[in-house]
Image 1 (cartoon, rainbow, N blue to C red):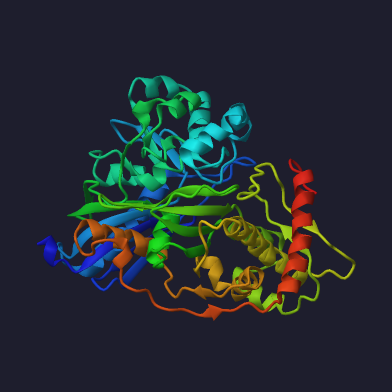
Image 2 (cartoon, rainbow, N blue to C red):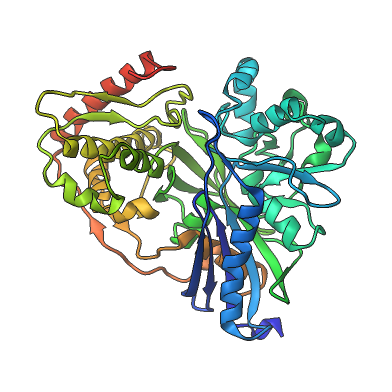
Length: 492
């Protein structure tokens, strides 16, 4: 019987890996699996994944854990977390993908997006988001305009669309459920943040047929039954990856914040039951259940892992693992503005390009690597500054997570620039953990995310810069941002 089950299953479908974890009743991860995922870049600015690779890699990771248990009734429920704003269309009857998976990083709709510039304030007031090509609506419109026969079939009700969670749920339930959750729907520029439903005015503005969109459910809800490895498992949660990480790291009260260094970088601050709209930042949902709704403010850095991958491609690094060692030989401060995929919050310059300022005859490779690390930390600082300008919310605690948090010099630089202590989480799979814990709410293991089990403490990084030194180097960073803004649209 499911009420005697020992585990929850959490899935995390990300930009570089598909992961799965088994979580026990104490909220601890007991087993985990990961399958790599290839990213394709067929043209400049285009970023794609193969749909079958996404599905098969996630199924493979989940099946590894299911087979390791040996009992068909051991898993009470599963929860799904996923890379947000990444979109796909498929045939309603066969499930056959009709497009590649268009990544959140993809910029092919950048020029198209300009036609809605006069509606920026309307879009922001309804969605809490900025008008940028990173979100799903411009990508969907681009596909409908450019893929042969897609719009006609979409208007005939023969096509379904959704973010990655929706695609996985549809296949796991063998086509029985076409649904998404509030956090993922909120990243499409089509959901009204106040009514928590698709907005007819926005659907008309972007010219998106309502018939291709999934129904919207709370993050903790009944998403049907998955058929996996010969067993049936209730799907009881769906949530965006960053919000799942917030839950997995225990940032479940107002003022608690998380900085996630992954393919991109994200600073999320829990604002509780209060929706807060701040200049340059995003207002969105943290999670929703039948009983409660929690909100966040969020800022995005578009290039973190991709920045270090670029350094490896250039031959300036062999691996991110050597960054801490390389930085020990840096003697100069150079300023690098990471904009390989444009600049996100709070600048919102999608056509910006990476700029390096302050080069001199004695600048070394180590100085450039340091500049990249500090550039990420500076961009997170910009987001934090936008938060701290308001009195409506304060960052009380900050936890670092993601692959980049293993780079001690990055977390230390972040602490130095923010002037606050940062705890680096020991939980390596916080996103999958958060999805699993949320599924536990629906099946009765916990009443609310606010009472999730306490997470394990990690290393504390404390600021080492004086306030005067911090303000001095931050002033120079602002000039670097201004320079990049002037040259938006081309490399410096």
